[in-house]
Structure formats: structure tokens, C-alpha cells
Image (cartoon, rainbow, N blue to C red; front, side, top):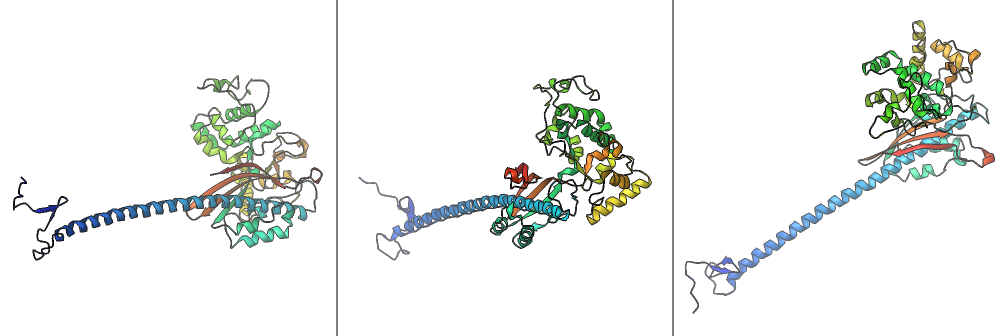
Length: 419
């Protein structure tokens, strides 16, 4: 026998309570009480669909945002690379202008480069579609199509966003790799003078470091001599002595530096020392150069702070005279000397240096450290598209194409890094 349901229990359908009589007890339809559960099931299905749709919309928006960011990131990288092409165009145009103005067809000994040259004209300016016509005029005016890609400007117009150029003269710094080119005496002399500057010396004294020892430890790391005997002024008997005690053991490289970060391996050279002195140092160019093509610092772009360290005799009345000359150079973007003027005369007039042609072959003669032209430049470009930014750092060396070797390029990329 089937048990009767107590009257006090509600009528149920699929576990849900329903009205036994249907529409307020006025209907005798046997299915009327089941309509409430159908509505509940429909609401549940719609809710699930809404949740699924919301999740799908959210996932789509995230994917679209990621795709857009990735797209802008790639565009920003190519904008930075396009900035490098524009920088090469400016450097090539500047060299062509100097050659034409100097009425030269070979050599660069009488060329003059300064802070106001063509290569610095676009520094700090955001370059986009609105400013590309200016670059196109440079390319056409100097007939650079023979050595440059003539379609660079047209390609730039296809890109969104903009890039910002910053071209600086790498020849304004002390080249450490000259120690591998047989000119280590000049390099150590420069380093000793830099480390002996009053503020710099006080900093090294605070860290209990000797500037002369530090300079010759750099020499021992780079020079390629067969002997392992350390320089007398390095503070060690063996050039490997400060490194074999490390874990793991090391030895002096005895080769040119591939990166300025290698200085951190030099005994005593820590992060603080690197932050203070690295801005005055470079390793480019690092290739072995001929006797007639030695890398020299550009007197017209070298910072006043470094020059005052290299020429401590510029004091008193001379200090005031040099301050006026440097202020005019930096404000008016002029050169310290006239084109073709002898370096010893420029140093005498601005820094009171009395060295001259009597010892022109002597590495101690500081006039031999400088020239008025530059061939190696640091290019930093930042490409911006939307919220994405890419930074590119390159070292560009200008060269003179040799028709006999079928050379057309007027530059070499010595270093390239995209951040």
C-alpha cells in the first residue's frame, strides 16, 4: 500500500514546492503547479549563460589588450630601429657637409666636429610623421642616396608613434682599449689625472683606494703582454694575484674589453666607483688601428669637468678664461678652436697648457691626446607607440668608403642593444 502524504507537507515537483491548486487555488489544471519550477530552471540557465558570456567577454578583452600591447611593443622596437636609421643619416650628412665645406676628398685630419653640428640637430625632438620631411630634405640636399637607403623616410611614414634621438660623441671619453693598441702610456696618464682630481681623489680616499694603483690594474687587465708580472704601480707583484684568490678563480684577461661592465672585475672597482667614473670612459672603437688613424679625444666635445682634471694647471686667471670659453662653447654650440687650428694652440689659449711640437711624439704630451674631429658616436633612441616604449643603444663609427674595395657604406655598427 502506498503511504498517503500528510496534508501538512507541501506538494513538490522535482524537489521544489509547488502550489497544489495552481493559480491561487482557482484552477483544476493538473500541470499548473509545475510551471513554477520551469521558470526557476529557465532563470538558472540564463544566469549560467550570463556568467559564461561575462567570462568570455572578460577573456576576450584581456586577449585583445595583450595583443595590442604586443603589437605596440613590436612597433615601438621598430620605431627605435628607425631612429637609428635616422641617426645614421644625420651622421652621414654631417660628414658629407664637412667634406664639402673643407674642400677635401681624402682624409679627415682637418675636419671639425662640435656640439652644434648636424648630427645633434634632432636631439631630444620627438620625430613622427609631422617632422619626417625635414629628414627627407637632408637626404636629398646631400645626395645621400648613394650610401643610404633612400626609402628610409617613406618607411617611417607607415609607422604609428614617434621616436626620440640622442646622439653624443663617444670621442669625448677616455678609450681604455687603447691599452691593447700599444698606447697604454697615454691611457694610464689620462686615468691617473682623472683619479687625481680633488673631488674624485677624495672619493677614492674615502673608499681607501689609490688612483694610480687603480689605473695600472686596468692596464694589467687589458694589456696583451706575454709576461704576468704586474706593473710596478699596481700594488701587486703578479697581475693575476688579486683574482686567483676569488671563488671561482680568475686570471687577468690580457685582451681588450668587450664591455665597460668588465671594469667591475677589476680589484677595487665596485658599483659606486663605476657610477662615478664610467661616464668618462669608453671601450670604442676596440679594433686595432693603424699608426695614422689613432683614436683621439675631441677637444670640442669633451666635458669641461674631464678637461679640468686632465689639465690641472688651468687655475687662477686661466680658470676664468677657460670658464668663459667653455660657457660660450656649450651655450652657442661653437668649437673651442677654429677649423684647422693646432691643438697645442687651442690648449694654450683655453687651458694654459704649454706643451707643443717639441715633444709631439711623446705620450706625455697632452696635445697628442686630442683632435678636433670625431668618427665614433653613441646613438640612443626611444621608440614610443601607445603605452609601449623601447630603447635602443648603438655605437656607430663613420668611415670613408673606399671605391677600390667596392665599399659603399659610410658607417659601421660597433655595438647594438635593444632594451
